[in-house]
Image 1 (cartoon, helix red, strand yellow):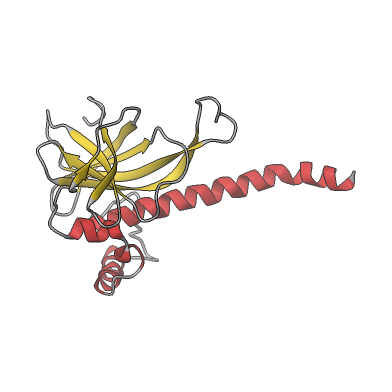
Image 2: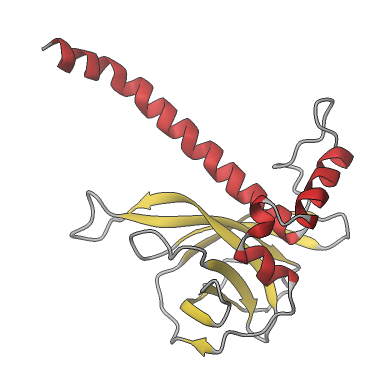
Length: 203
């Protein structure tokens, strides 16, 4: 009986720690995408007495030179290389939810749009897969990383199913442009999944 009572008392504390860890993971993954793309996001990178912008940029440059952390991932290899459309493109699927959160100007003057979204499928993405945002006319214009999970409201997975959510950035979208979201295998040769980005999702 005591064990049950203790578990009940500790449950709110456990939920708080789970929520805190999930929030930290989401911030870390979003910051990693920004670093891979060479974006300085003032909402996600520090610039204060304890960590000046110049020092953070220098640390990121050293990591980039040595291909450490996020710079050793397939996403950075894809972004830093010349874009080539995957040789295998599957038919587009529906059900993607994507939202443009806010925007800012990067240090080089380009418009940068912060995005978040949720994929319509349950379960984790394939290991080392890359989420890429591609303009309909060709060209890699953004990336994202899985950063959170949303409950799957479709039966019969309503109780246990989780759909992967992601955070990322889109570079300099223009009025009337259309985009697709591709989930690309680590070898960059195959688009495992392909979603048209809904009209109006990007202002």
